[in-house]
Length: 143
Image (cartoon, rainbow, N blue to C red; front, side):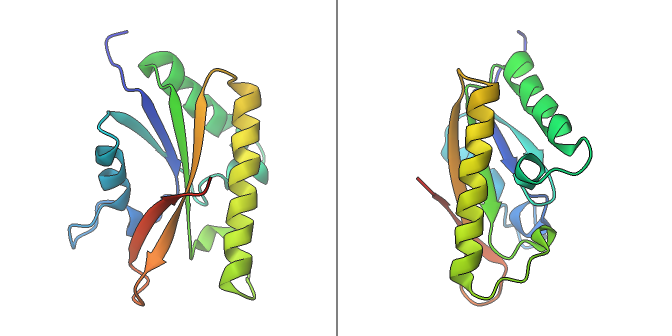
């Protein structure tokens, strides 16, 4: 195996999380904080394709994760959803309702991955908004 990275990150494609013009890169910073190389798989809505898949989307995401594991040796999968995700297309009555939905989806996605890939470690995370500008995130483990 010529290329090796022990980490695979599944997260949303939202530009606010990645290589921004203001220099912010919350997902990149997160991967660097792990001290390991990592594959980053982006999907609109993060784990949504696993828990509420459109036609073939779940299998496509599972294939990408399998490639990370088989070709790059990923041993840990980090699932990172984020607050204020437009791909969710839900109108949450409260922030608490939104956080609950993300927690439920992350747990369900982790269970799906553990059944499909029993040797992998799955960690669920949520990027929570900081400040009032809707542009800054703090990534926390959901437990």
